[in-house]
Amino acid sequence: MSEDKLEQDPGPEEPSPIRLIGTLAVAGLVSGVIIVAIYLATFETIKENKARELRESVFRVLPNVTKMQKLLLKEGKLVVSYEEEKDEKPIYAGYDDSNKFMGYAIPSDGPGFADTISVLYGYRPSDRKVIGMWILASRETPGLGDKIYKDAAFVANFDDLAIEPPIVATKKGKSKPNEIDAITGATISSVAVAKIINKGNDYWASKLKPGMAPAYEEPVAPAASPEAEEAQAQ
Amino acid sequence: MAKEQHAYEEFMKGLWRENPVFVQVLGLCPLLAVTNSAINGLAMGLASFFVLLGSSILVSLLKKHIPKQVRISCFIIIIATFVTVVDYSLAAMLPVLHKELGAFIPLIVCNCLILGRMEAFASRNTLRMSIADAFGMGAGFLYALVALGGAREILGVGEFFGISLFGPNFDPWVIMILPPGGFITLGVMLLFFNWIEQRKINLDKQIAAEEGAN
Image 1 (cartoon, rainbow over the protein chains, first blue to last red):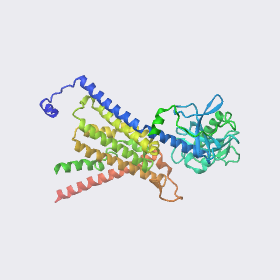
Image 2: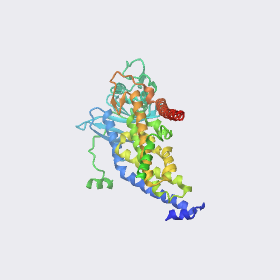
Image 3: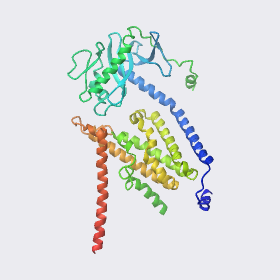
Image 4: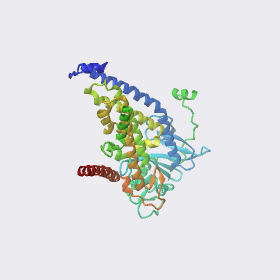
């Protein structure tokens, strides 16, 4: 039909502005519907992926931990938080099988060599020690800077590390309890990780006193969320 | 039958004669950025393949309804929709890979290879030819990405698809997985393609000359 029309009328006929706007509007509308549909369809899975990734990271930086809960500092007290919204500085408390408190997992970030490095580290308030470190996100140079998480020996530096005086990355071989061995060829990244953990400790170490952690609460579907109830019913 | 042959030609040209990377030298931004391992190249190649195929089908079907004054914006809307679908699906199904590829999945929108095929081919040809073209170009881009990623991973890490090849004593050539390694590898591959092309031309000339002498 339209092909015939084209052959009969080959002149440079201008489509009306309404037609142009209409085409773009329809294209935008259809595209919008598809994008929102795929967003809604994948939303739950993406959320679960992120939660699982966080849980795995917490278990990695806190040895022997099998349970965790998110905590927020409110008026000098740590309260358990279930909310999914953007929180102000959450930390995560880890517990073993018998619900005994084992330590905190503290997120902290700062500038690395290439981009911001996000670190999660385990902290035990009873003896004021860092007991594990894991990189959540970084864009450090492949083969050099990325050893901050690929090099098991570097990661092991943080398994038992005193935080006072502040952590120092050294190239001469660590000799003090607050020193870590910097990676050859990636000194900036190594120092950055130490600085990021020091930054986290500056904020948290004085606030987290021994015996302050709340007891583990079995996760129950929060009654306030009808969506969660609905999901459970199904 | 003649039509069958034609569609086959359209498919084959993307693989070799008009390979988007080695001959047209298009889409180099994602090519150089993500090919530090074979698996990243494969994932990026498959994502681009899907977007190219989907957009080609849609553009070819809708070409009569899209006024030429707004065609580029319409192509971009179509491509961007497919890219968003790929982005969210990857984040849901393969989060590790999605994290690795990072910003380069959304950036498929501005891969000039895809917009180029829409403008130069899908908007002027039948659905059948457009599908053949998209398959060829997509596959050509895919194998270029895997070849580049594979070569860089083998030299720069000593692994292929994460499988160690040379044992623990191999000293990896770190520069190969850094940006310069991408340029070096691509340069060598382009050299190889041009050398073959040149050899073919010389051979043709020789044959013609011999025929002329006879």
